[in-house]
Length: 284
Image (cartoon, rainbow, N blue to C red; front, side, top):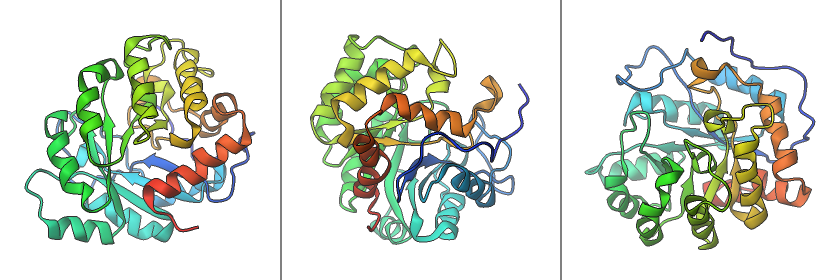
């Protein structure tokens, strides 16, 4: 499916609080070599994303290493540097990475490690414990993306990790499940542990009911916010690396889903500002 990337438009109904953070975006540039079998959309630049920031009222951002570049974090960290103090990075490093490299990345703004069990991810769940132990010493968290239906078999491992954990994309249930499903109840238990956060993003990737409401995924997002707004964060998922499958979504419409998922302004303050400030070390 061909698409046109949308970078600006009618303002969202939701007015972002001061210091609002988008906790998951990617950048792409054809000058960098990519790995086969990974999503590789057209180039997306810092200049492109700055338009989205202005459109939605975003002031802080977390740049996440795309699968396309494996453990070559250069493009991601160059973007963090260009965006300045308002940006942090989530990167990919392999077993055997030196403490000196982890220290260098930390000083450059990295605050998390991406573990990705889908779409050609470089680090799988088999190295989760090993790598969590390495990055914990640098006060990083681990960002985990998997099919949420598999969470029960990894619950004990996640509970053992020494660092904070972020579960990506509302649990990323590739087949959306009801709230009472054992795998979603497992996610709620992990959130209740006090060390696991959930990223509210990309409902369009897994919804079978479709937009604009994405009700089969929205019901899970609402349940998560109700259970623990203090451990939810939000993301746009720009530039929507799989948009060729479903068309390019409207950023303002996706943001406005938060009026349904988190109707309480105090909860939205936590989700957009306070929680990401804690996770990524943004200064007040």
